[in-house]
Length: 357
Ligand SMILES: [Zn+2]
Image (cartoon, rainbow, N blue to C red; front, side, top):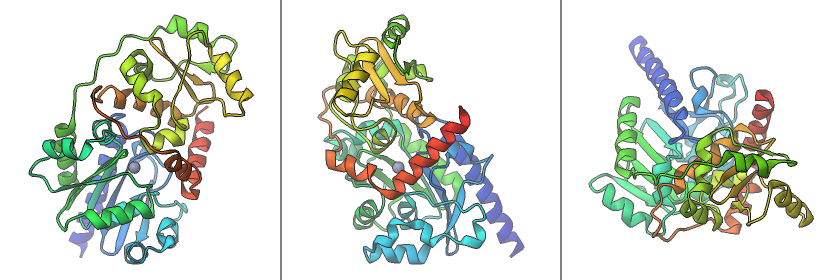
């Protein structure tokens, strides 16, 4: 018994350490995105909503959930499955953390360790209209399934349950990301590295940003340069800018940057773009793309918005310019923005941003 407990403790420590490493890599996880879990008997230890994998060694980010009733709710298509917090084990959760909005994805995989990332290599392929065929060639011989885009929560859980085979250990989620599962943390890390390697493409090299021009364009406005200079490539690479202009590619973009991307027209400054938005009763955008020059972000952009501004550049730089793309619909975006579980996660990011400033 003592042996077993020791093994489980060390496996948990290994999970924390893997989570922190994965969370610190902006090509795998941005902001509060992505999540990891470990099953111990009937309990699923899952990353809490709104917490950052990056902080897994510093903070308590895991929350214990009773698996059987949660899986029953998924099987019954019961909306209770949307609120995983109802299945959290209160006596082992002194901080009152809420389980991730993607808890059901982890519970549905039978393997003990599950790692879900918003890997930019995966997303850049998973937004292509031919995603399943192209990824199929790269992952030939592996037990994987493609799950077309569904809102996270019950719709995604149902889609996974319908497609997964009994030994499937890789899920590619359309317009969303990657899930790998294994019996140990070490095996999960190996599989993650292998799949990301097989899906990797060389990003197009973007021209440098024109920061002098951007600072002039920001004058007299509530906009500033982004924290991560990598974000500029979404606008300095005109191919990336064209892809961004056509709509929203993945859910966290909507959550942190709003629906689609705002591209400045010739002659626009940040102030004129903001004035136009206000005049039309639209929210002032969090990010503005100035084609060929770079991007500006709103002065109050939080750490989540900064991470997703960079993600847009990293994802679009990898997409084949010839590929047809599938964008999220207005209805997809509306469902995300108005989902209670997602509002909670955004609120935590706002609070965290306030603490950092
Ligand atoms: Zn996700």
